[in-house]
Image (cartoon, rainbow, N blue to C red; front, side, top):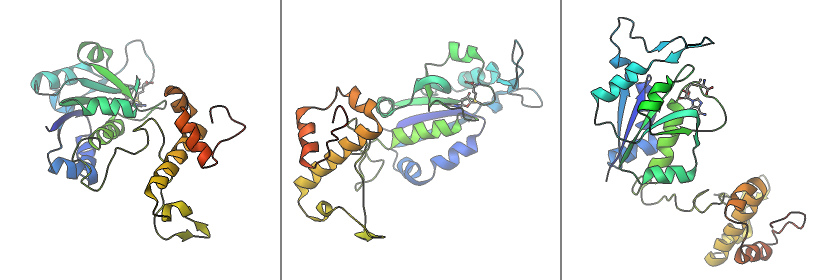
Length: 250
Ligand code: SAM
């Protein structure tokens, strides 16, 4: 099944350029996903193709008018649902949200600009709102591309045979273990001996211990969300002497 993604934006070329490059480009050539970009400026009827106006109630900046966006939706009933607006007020985008979207047959992303989108578009047509994080971007395009890339690389066939998203950060609620490549020594820093031992079962356990230790140190909230460490996880930290006596939970 090909995932259909529609993007409503004032910068179609920015979306199309990135989406046809690298992993996303190859995945669309393999029909893993299909992009449909809609410039809602095309739905304007005035000579200046105006998409924004001053805010009711006063205040700085301009607001995206409702009609060009609503008219784009009317002109293209095939646009995939749910329609998701990228807004700083939306629910935070996480691996779990990416997984949720990757299980759909399609979805659409609405990119705001200026001070944002007339609330009536959100009330009338938008099914969901997603935020990339607690900061403000100039527009929804980068956020849309982040969502698309995180979702598409979870789809079967997106990464080719030799790559996998299954043991990456967040896939099992943990951050990833450290990765190394050749040469074995860089500025006197050696690759951990165990990774050159050929003992794959022990390497597997070492990686898991490293992932647990890193997550405990950097993102204890992720460990708490999994309900803390279980007995096997504590044992694996002990096996590799990664227990921090001064910390709770490992
Ligand atoms: N006035 C808005 C506010 O304070 O929430 C910010 C508008 S922002 C300058 C313009 C557009 O960028 C937004 O409509 C949204 O589409 C996008 N945007 C900005 N920050 C974002 C974020 N953290 N996540 C998702 N989209 C964002």
